[in-house]
Amino acid sequence: MMASQTIKEKFVELQKSKQTPQNSRPKIQRVPQYLRNRNNFEKHYTPKFVSIGPIHHDNTNMKPGEEYKLMWAAKYIENNGFILEDRHKKIADKINELKGHFSDDVLTLTGKSLEGFDSLEEKLSWMLFVDGCSLLHILEKANVDEAGHMNIKVDQLMMDVLLLENQLPYQVLKLLWKDDNESEHEEIPQPLLLGQTRWVTVREGEGRRRRT
Image 1 (cartoon, rainbow, N blue to C red):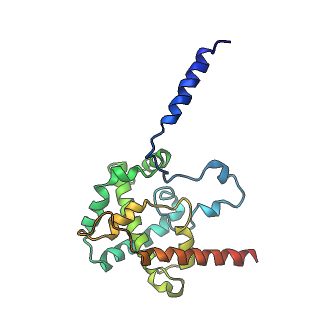
Image 2: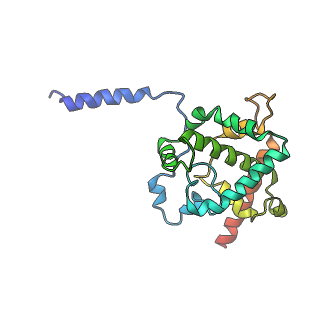
Image 3: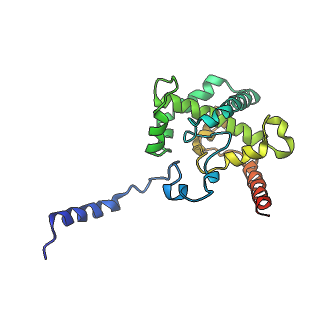
């Protein structure tokens, strides 16, 4: 039996599927619907206080956290002796490249409300700048035993930062932490990233206490 025109078109489509670019990379995206439908799973991707990145940025429940992020970002800039405008320019100059780290639906959602910005790129560059600086300040200063540095309940902050939909591209952090005379290929210092290991330990401990 001869293959129909529809089947022939399907053959072509199947052959083209092999041509997926080898350099394609995972993107920051929303949790799939089948996971959203699971009972009690929302706590793993929806923050309670602080949004990091664009997915929950426009959630009205996150507005109080925006003021804290501005404070943390300002402290990060001041503590490191950076020039505010120069640090933002690092993100703005790379914004088209940074957009590629997010899925199309996340970018579409972010562009629905520009909040007074002239374009999606301008809104996203400011958001990544503030969120990146505040996250680096959190990595440096957040400590359950010394909560005064953050002016907030640190254990809840730690849990929010580790959620699936609260993510930033690693490149954002690299652009914001390094000095102008340092290589863009230089990695973020290990002591900074070790803070995340401490947070995971705290979070696991909280989980065990809730189950007992």
